[in-house]
Length: 205
Image 1 (cartoon, helix red, strand yellow):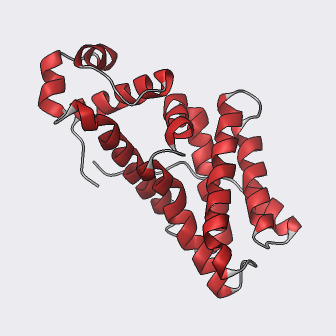
Image 2: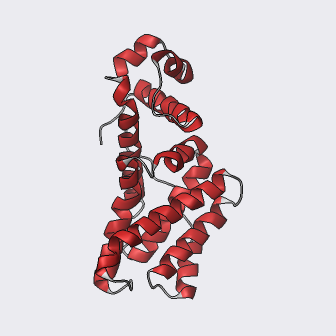
């Protein structure tokens, strides 16, 4: 994942706000500069093509979240615990950074890069859990299980953003339901889902 300059970070964060609030994948130079608090020239100097800005932002978000979640797994080998933690981190971040959460919830179903954010790491852990006997579902069901994990996580994020549940409640419920659906015993699934979450690691600059 490429390292972004401070101006690029500001521009990308502004783009996320605009895209999430308006439900559009386009922004012009003037509104982007105003939202980012920078001059129009700064936009031209840091964005290669406004027509591809949405894809650039989606790719940056996907890569950044993948790296941060993966970093939180350094001492965690159990696929079920990793899966529960990953779901919880997504849901808590939606609470901590609502614009980020709204962007993901609004566009994840229609954007391949954002779908990969919710399928890459979970798919690897689901495969590892299945191969080790940790999970109980048929191999040919893998794509359906991955889709279920992604949809459940997005729904939990939406509940938090809509004020229906706290991030702890929504994250724990989602993780427990997912773990139970792949064969983790009820009490263990509940305990893993309720386990403390570490802070989402920051990436080295």
